[in-house]
Image (cartoon, rainbow, N blue to C red; front, top):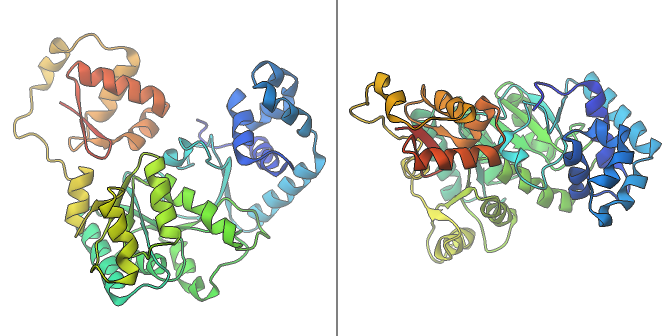
Length: 377
């Protein structure tokens, strides 16, 4: 991963996503050949040796001046308005989202919050929130500030549960990120503009869409994958039997992320979706922030008696340099580290880190807990 992508790479990432006929998955496949977008264009003749025959027709499409012109205009807009263009290879890019196959190559971000916070949770739900749902948001976020004061709260700035989650986070001093379904040249709905502006100093606004993109219905469905993908867990506060919150919950499960839901009364319309998620074992039932933190193992206490540091090396089997790196990264964190935070700090791809951590478990060096948390034994 690059510390920050250079101007040329940003331009090529933006252009790659703007080429007619090249969808997101195809653009990602071309990007992955060289692990950068610049080479996908400048070394396109080599792509034929690395791509599937069905994808080779895409190579001819890379000759598209219009895509570069659109990309240049967007970069100018971003620079003028203080918006960061964060490429998928950039260290600032949400590491959890990067591992999702349909992650966008570029995100547009304005704000101060860390997209790679140690703990990230999304709160989603119905746009027709009841007093019960709003009170749940307030109580949950308040308790999270007390129990887990650095957690990042993510939602979608929509009516109902989304805006309740953002406002509760702002009120209690937690950073909060809104994932938008349009470009950063507007705020939708407009009545939430004041809250959005406040979030710029305590979190931020994030989108995959270029300026000029309107908040069309399909964009809201697409943006839900970012809400689910950039978080450790998704919590559905209130939802009817259909709605965007249930889509986000399904995506979280598909991405192998934890999913939770608050229950409601059996006859409550806006709890029926939550109750169904729990009934069908698609989400774990929680009643409080304490339940959530315990399920995620974010409150793992250090062992009462730590083994002397001096004897650890003598007892362990010989470790490879990569294993040494993971152990040394984990060692200062007595409560453990979530794997997404670990791979960012160690700068090791998550698929490689998973294999190494499994080996370290077998050697008795590290222990895994619920929520993808690892700690040195």
